[in-house]
Image 1 (cartoon, rainbow, N blue to C red):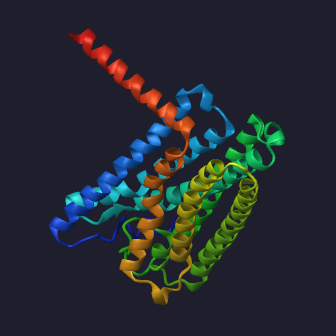
Image 2 (cartoon, rainbow, N blue to C red):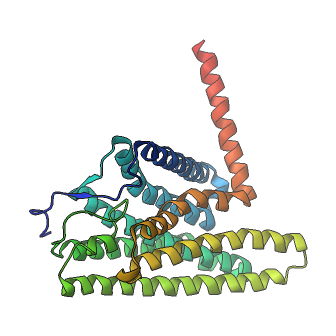
Image 3 (cartoon, rainbow, N blue to C red):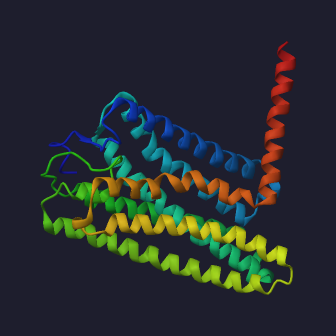
Length: 319
């Protein structure tokens, strides 16, 4: 990458200038980060340890939790460390890593959300064909496609972004290295338009996935409305609507952040948008996907009881 000899570090956007607000930002993000680690970690452990949850739906939910853990761990620890130590510096290699890992994990997450919508569509609308359409081999192929597509897309964006000459300093107007903010440091209009074109193509394919996801949920809602039990309808709606709300928040804020014109780009607006699509979903998703899921809640209770039982046994043996 041509910039490695001229730029050795970048300066990230600070959340606050005063020491008190910097520490407040650190503790706030630490609480959100620990909540995301705990929630997603419990989901991963419960699904991995309970053989009753070894089904396609929970396999994709486990993959979603992994992407959530990865995406929030890519951005939040660094900004917390910067606030704690009163610095803005991130190394060149660290910035490249964020530019690659964050889109890779976010795109993979979006693809898994689309696959999960398809899983629910088949389970509710075509239950007799579920084993055929979502067998173990089909699940592995879909998961591999999600990871592979996200990886290749992120790699292409990273190489294109950091092959552009950066002539306008090294100060990034965001709390992590984000592609639109890196592009602002370039004066090469031709190279800039190449990366913008890639972003447009990526957003276009993401929009197709979103349309597929919405159509799947529409079909699910139509099937649910035919359920004679009012309690069953309420359970289905209360489970699906929060998923769509969080997904819509993530998609609208991320697309607007990446494709908005430079004339309406302000550091405070960019900061709020980035928090909404990079920090909020990984912390909220575990609540949404476990709050109404009785099987997962039972597995979590069993896991927690087993942990405390083993802890009491260990304490007894150590006496």
